[in-house]
Length: 139
Image (tube, rainbow, N blue to C red):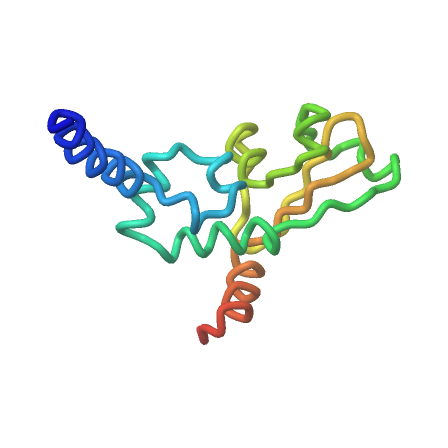
C-alpha cells in the first residue's frame, strides 16, 4: 500500500508536467497546428505572440477564393492542389506546401488545380491595414 502511495506521489507530478510543458494547443487555432511544426509554434508562443495573432487573423482575412471565367485562367500560375486540400482549405498550409509567394503591394493570384477557383492572396500592405483595423492598432 505504501509503495502504491509512493508511486502515485511520483507519477502525478510527472503527468501534470507533461501536460503543461510543450505546446499549448488550447489557445491555438487548429489550422495553425496543421500548418506549422509544434516547435515553431511553441517558440512563437514564448517569443513572438503577435505573430501567432497575425497568422490566426490571416487564416480568415488574408485571402479569398474566387471563381474566374476560363479565359482569365489561361496564363495564371496554377497550384496542383489535392481535392482534400481544397475541401478542407488551410491557406497557411497551402502557402507553405506549394511555396506560394505574397507581394508587399500587389495581390497574387493562383489557380487551384483544374478548377475555376482562384486563390487571391492579399498584399502585405492590404492585410496590414485589415489587421490593424481588426485589432484596433493604429499605424
